[in-house]
Amino acid sequence: MLLAATGAIPTWPGLIHLVALPPLDQFTDLRLLLSRASSWPVFLALLAVVTAVRVVLMAWLLGGLDARRLRFAALFYAVAFGPVLVAAFADAVAYAVLYSRLFWPAVALVGVLVFTLGAVPWQGRPRLREAVALTWRRGLRVEVMLPYCAVVLALGAVADRIPGLTVPLVPVSAVATGLTIAMMDRPALRRPGAALTALVAVLTAVSIVFVATRGYDEPEPGPPQPGSLLIVAGINSASGRSVIHATDVHRLGYRCEQVYYFSYAGPGNGQPQEDATCPIRTGAPYGPIDTERPFREQVDLFVEQASALPRPLVVAAHSHAVWVVWEAVATGRVDVDALLLAGAFPSTPTGYPPPHVNDPGRVLGDLLRVAASSAGLAGFHFDPDSPAARDLLGTLGTAESILAQQLPPSVRAMSLPSAADLPLMADHRLNVERNECPARVAHPNLPASAAFEDATIRFLNGRTPPPCPPWRDWGAVAFRPFGMPSGQALR
Image (cartoon, rainbow, N blue to C red):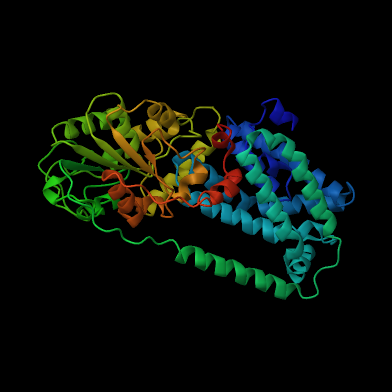
């Protein structure tokens, strides 16, 4: 609490996890160190210090600071360290490159680790192997761990909704941890295996229902639209090879002769159609590397290609392309009539320093480069030090500065975020005419989804959107505390 109050560590909803059961406490330590450590020596030194403190505290809670308990605690944290580091790194990368498909697996891994290991130290066994075996025989103490996990989620949600209560909730979290440890002394359930099996069955059923209810009904085709539609894909796309290229423009009310596709390689006589709904009659063929050129060059290319198109001009942009289009329109370099923004990120919350620069996030940046190289071997190309990545992702606050610029009053705009992306945002709403209800569609699939089509048809034709369920952002509220402190401290 003192460190947070003095600003030594950021105040964010995950602060309550510093006093949580292990290994959630270790996960929180690593999140802080990855975001704040300015060099490898600082990271390793602080990691050694906080680990030593954790070991001593666990030994004391186990009954005393003798060699046996200290050895047990040290072995526990050593065993948990590997998977916890993987979860913390995936969490950090998700915020650094704005990729929610890393955030959710990281949270799932942490949940599994807490649920399977959280009860282990408190089973009264002197050896770790014996404690693990007894924990499983006792059904992972689900009768204790399940209420505790619910309390942790509830406290995090309150801290997320009311940031001013974050620091006062830290001792409340500590009390919940202490009570949970004390309840481990109670007799286990008579049929712990049945209770654990029932829990797994319920979670499986809930997951199936959640996935099965994500679909959207296809909307009725919209009426014919005048003018032209310019489609702008995001980073790592290629000519005709991105989801937004496959958007059903006919359903939106456009004929192929009205549709144009932006090229990151500049003007030209056409590109391969590939997955695009319509033939690509303009622009030079481009590949993923062209999307990594400097941000200012991308803006210049957009202005050049959009300026000569028939009006009224509607621009559909996905993900990183939102920043390109917004910069060009907000600065008055090109006139458009409407913007359809899919998967926009209002902020770049963490950033990472350039290679060999000792600034906060140095360790994260170095590990990110190693991971990106490994991903390249698997066919996924991302260069964290490409000009576009450095301009937009590596520099803290770039997105905020772009989107802080006001669009011209004559420009209508709508924004449709993915519900899966919400934990990576402090606030998903942009300064536009219509902020649509977050869609239960994965970020990459958003532009070709029925949700985007329905929102677009309603927006272009002045129709009222359907009501947004109040629970649509509950997942973000519950799990945002498991995110990175640098991003959430901005709240």
